[in-house]
Amino acid sequence: MTDLPKCPECGMAPSLKVRSRGMNWGSAEVRCSNGCPGVRAGFSFPPEGEEAARLLLQEKWKELVEAK
Image 1 (cartoon, one colour):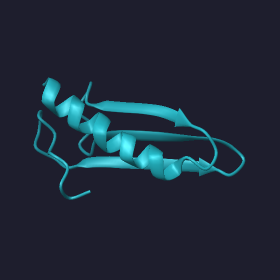
Image 2 (cartoon, helix red, strand yellow):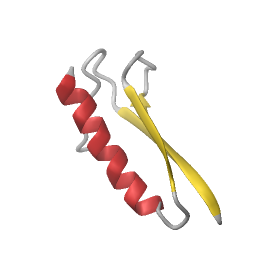
Image 3 (cartoon, one colour):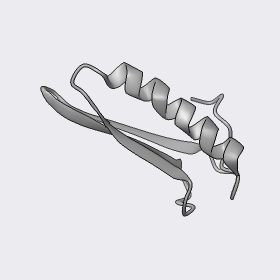
Image 4 (tube, one colour):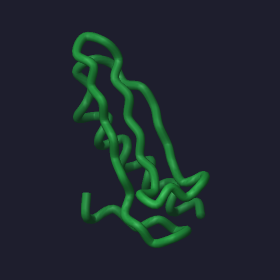
């Protein structure tokens, strides 16, 4: 995760949270560690999809930073 770009608003590193709920859908979120408004993305993912969710979070963060 250290290769991810910093927040375009404040320069902090991103925070990734992935919560897998076993047989139920999990949730994933990437946001600025400092809580800058509008610099976050989240989604739900199917069971057994935790690794794919982590990769998608990294891509979504890169898109957010490039859009700013």
